Each structure stands twice: as C-alpha cells, then as structure tokens.
Length: 340
Ligand SMILES: NC(=O)c1ccc[n+]([C@@H]2O[C@H](COP(=O)([O-])OP(=O)(O)OC[C@H]3O[C@@H](n4cnc5c(N)ncnc54)[C@H](OP(=O)(O)O)[C@@H]3O)[C@@H](O)[C@H]2O)c1
Image (cartoon, rainbow, N blue to C red; front, side, top):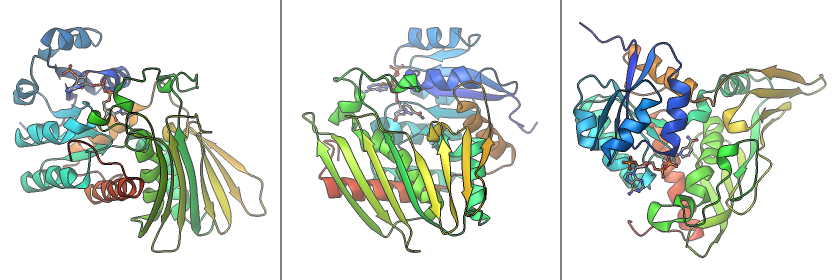
C-alpha cells in the first residue's frame, strides 16, 4: 500500500536542545508522530520519547535510519555532523529535514545535495523561518508589488549570553558551549547569521557582491559581525549578527513604494506592518500557538504527500547558494574551522 504519510512518523537524530523544541511543537499535530529517536545513549532516547508517548529509541543513529517505519529523519545534531547524518539517512532511503546551518561549508553541502538528487529522496534545510504564514505572506506581498520594487533589506539577529529576551531560548549563558566552540563550527554567523543571509536571499536571490567585518573572540569564532550583500538587480542587504549584544530583532524590506516590517521576532514572524506610500499602514497578523516548528513539519508533510523531492520554500539550489555566501563571508572575516 502506498505511504500517504498520515501520520508522518518522525525519526530524530540527536535528541538535544532543538529536537526537544521541535518535538514539543510537532507532537500535538494530529497527523504527525514523534516516532523514534537515535541517540549515542539509548536511555537518553527513551527519556526523550517518554514525553511524547514513547516510541522506538535507538542507541545509534544507524539503527534509527534502519527502522522501516520511520518516514522522515530530522537531523538535529550540531552542524559539523549534519553532512554525515544527512548522508546516513539519505543512503537508507529516508527523506531528510536537516537543521540549519545546512552544513559547515559549501563542499559538504554539495555532497549531501548530490546524494539526494542521485537517489531521488526528499531533502530540505530546516530554515523554519521561511515556513511561518506571516513570512510566506511577506514574500507574496513583495512579489505582488505591494511596496513597489523591493530594493533593500535590513535585518539583524544577535544576542548576548545571559540577556533575557522574549525568545527565552536565546538566553544562552554558557561561554564554553557549542556557540563559542570553534571545533563545533561555532560563532554568530553560523548560528544565527545564517537567518539574515537566508532572508536576504529569499527576497533577492544570489548575491554577486559580499562584504563583511567581524570581531573574532578569544575562542576564535565570530562574535560581532556586519555583512553587506549586493545583488545582481542592484538590491542591497544590510545584515548584522552577534553573540556580544542583543540586537533589535528587526527585519524590514524596503521598496520603491513602501516597506514591510516583519516582526516579532521576525524569524518566527507573527505580524507584518505594510507601509504603502501615501496610505495608512496595514497590520497583518498570523497568530499561532507553540514555538512554530509545526509549520516546518507541516510543510515537509505537504511536500512528501505531494511526491516532491525538495521544498519550493527553500530549494536545494538556494541552500547551496546560502552556503556559498556563508563561505564567502567567512573568507572575508578570516574564519576557518579546524575540520576544514
Ligand atoms: N531552528 C532553530 O531555531 C535552531 C535553534 C537552535 C539550534 N539549531 C540548530 O540545531 C542543531 C543542533 O543544535 P542544539 O543546540 O540542539 O545542539 P545540542 O543540543 O548541543 O546537540 C544536539 C544533539 O546532537 C547529538 N550529538 C552528536 N554528536 C555530538 C557531538 N560530538 N557533540 C555534541 N552533540 C552531539 C547529541 O545527541 P545524542 O548525544 O543524544 O546522540 C546532542 O544532544 C545545530 O545545527 C543548530 O544550529 C536550530
């Protein structure tokens, strides 16, 4: 009988911090099931799954991808392991949703994408910010000419360890943690700078000019980074990311005839304020419960049920292009990771 992915049975590689947030949002969905977890420690997998009604816990990632009833694998390990774990799942014939940043660099991303294309198995970068209804609406408005011709995007995403923000999860306090660890490809750019780059590229495509400055911290990763992207159509992106200061969390798309403000926080957008020249501002709200990972999971289900091998919201070409940009920014700021 053909699999209609109802429910879509998720298998999670690396049940850590982000996997828990994903599972909290996805487990209440009626046609999704947090079905299995692969951990280096089976007991940890069992404890993780208990919260979601139990499931198949495995003491290795290999066993997880071999489970015939896992429909889709969510790769939720730190990004230096994304290539290995995405390849593991794809080679087992499993569709893959791979957390951002997709990999450490373009060369790794190309290997993963090549495998998916060769085997015809679904693969998507977990750039969840693109899946929110308000963000999809912003994209539609921009394309429809609501603010004239979009010419510039200004966006920031930075936070300081210890700061309290309305996105409590950003309250990172561990200076010895993943974010500051050069061996785990840490730094602001790879952790949250990828969001602002992805946002600019969502509106303007692949940049043809890339400039950046950064302050590297004592552990060798970028902690305070400014980026300017130029696009073939003459559009410009002014972007910032930081681990030293909490930024305003603003994203504004500026057009020849108005602007769209995306908030709040823009990468989990709920509200748009659309300013059209000569008119009162319009507020568009797309409220939702939970953290928002449900939209990404529902989108993956839609793609799988439609027989797609990649997502129209973030194509594999776009993922490669974003990785190319991240490589170029890192070349500009002199940030090379030990595994490269
Ligand atoms: N979309 C978002 O909003 C968002 C937010 C935060 C992070 N992320 C992304 O999600 C990924 C994971 O981040 P996280 O904060 O969840 O990471 P984490 O909790 O530090 O690690 C996730 C899991 O990866 C597994 N793992 C395998 N090899 C590992 C190694 N050598 N060192 C550490 N862990 C290893 C561990 O699972 P086992 O021990 O059980 O095998 C661990 O629990 C990153 O790529 C990050 O950029 C996305």
